[in-house]
Length: 392
Image (cartoon, rainbow, N blue to C red; front, top):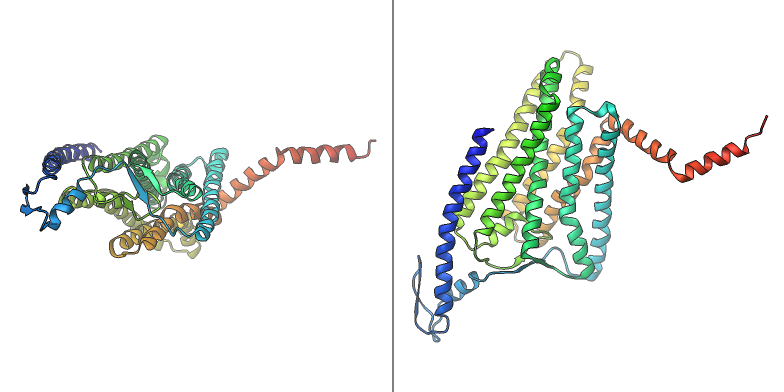
């Protein structure tokens, strides 16, 4: 933990120093271009030699540099089609999906909170996963619904960075919580006698705090790399929200530093959690195969079947989003992959856990029964039934 924190702090300091020097050079070049833009002389641009900007022969490098050095105050979210008929359909679709996502995950949170039998480490992390799913969806979908209603695609610079930061926090929380849940299943199946000792309340609180700190660090790193850039290539974002990968591609800073940052973040926040999940399930499968009876193997595997389904859905759509943004030139395909990753997956998680878990089903039934019994309509029916009974 200490080594990981020190490594992140050292990386932040190194990145801040490098980007600060790059930003100074970029601002100096910008001032030189703006001062000499009205002259017909030769402009010297650092790293590019001399380019003629005369009225007769204008070099494309100079006009390209002027486009790169504009400081933006807002972005435009291209999203999906601007067809009014299609936008009305998208409004109803996204609104219904958002309501289902929020209600389904809130039901799981309510069921785990109210049922004392579900106060275990596995359901503690499941409750936090549902909360992260609600936050992830609420970061992107309400803004898109408002844009459809107002027929606007504009988002301010501060609003875009805020949306990107919150999105990264909740997306990383999903990532790390799935890894912690895989470790919880590994301890429960491979070391059942020591499960209560290892996964105590202090350990669960520490793991959740570690997930939150790591997610917040990733968000701060993304903000650091974006804020250090003094200009952007363009203001159009080919998605319905401020996708971090696309914002990084819009910056006109050194592409080598941006690529190094992307690779390091991918290793720390993508490869390492996936490796932990794969290792945990490798041990889980090895332990299950050693169980002699088929009934015992089925019972052991059923405890982690829902989690494995969510892991495949989460990482499958995430990898699909990455591949679509890397190899697809279509705006609609990238936005569609983002919908699957940010909306469909959080919406399906409550159904996966409720349909494959008897304890969650039982807890939800208790919640529905308590809600129905405490409603005014049910109270009125009880009073009517009591008054209609014959008196002895």
